Image (cartoon, rainbow over all chains, first blue to last red; front, side, top):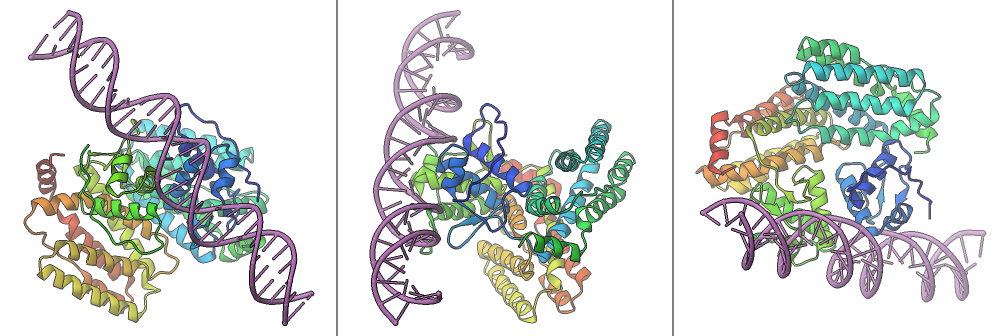
Length: 231
Length: 231
DNA sequence: TATTGATTTTTGTGATCACATTTTGAAAAT
DNA sequence: ATTTTCAAAATGTGATCACAAAAATCAATA
């Protein structure tokens, strides 16, 4: 059996086993440490995290509902393979979703929350300077999440996270094969637009942030990466 | 214990128990037959469908990941309550998601598939004429699903279904308190735009279809409905 | 050597059980 | 009548077991 490497995560008291399993698997998928196509076994995962099949199955069900995993006809479970077409769909959807989420947040976000965005952006820049890809990625996500959740009635966040999760394996491949991910972001542009409550400008900044960031990969570069990773 | 009424669904051979439980619960939520706020118990559901806690728990996990159910701090599970704000968010998100999905389908859909849309629309009109609300609702969903899934690489459909599911309970309330749901749709406009491969026109038709359909409820009417239902 | 066939192992699935926590309901006290 | 206390019932959770299906292994055959 393929040995599943699962980074141990800290487990807050009161967290259920299936929830913990969900978080650990999610994390592993997000950073691309589970190879697409590699089939996951319930017992294997349970053993790797020293628990039993029941909670692991629940975690797997959730992850498949979140689009992070695919159940085959054999009832086998795997990380979906990435294709150029799927990648294009994911980026386009991400742009649409996050522009919508940003627009819907403009009317709710407070100056205090915008200050927090500034702080997160600063921390991300520092992580980039230190060439800490993983930290930069996490801070980038936190920036976007903080913006979108400023809307208290927001219901889109799980969908945004789903897209991030489906993009995760590709990022993992990219980080493994590209010496250094060069980050470009339009966060300051977004912040300025937020201060002015300019909804269109916020949406434009978010759109550019996505399209020039991860979405900026050329088709040839994507094909190359996928080939390198043996997809 | 509150007796849970679960409409028996036909179960194709080979369908697992948790999958069957998922479908039955989903159906019940979609038509609003589970009151928001009513707490669901695993054992109660298992008993109602003559199975055991394990597969029911898996179904509940999936449904909560799909936004159809909410887990409270008590670990109790319930259908989320509807508010005017949430309703507004759901409609706005639905419009954005489905316009995107429609745009992404225009380049892929075949004339044959458009013919199928025509047939579905005709069937829906007949259901409306017969005042069969449930059938009309299902056919309306089939129309939209058929359009969006014309794109073979589409990844948005689960999200669209999630919004439908979250809107479901409200529809249930509306159908229970309004004598007759009057359906307005822009399907023929969408079909004409599809034949012309006019992406903007397709998106406009879908947007109008949503905003003038379920989204057309006035704020006062929504508040009234929610109050009637004792939310 | 490649291929078929049978046997063994692995795997997904769902029922059951034990345990801890929560909820409930009745009795007692204020 | 209201609140508090405490025991009983209900509930979520996770480990274990049995069963069937799928996969893998290996021997026999072409």
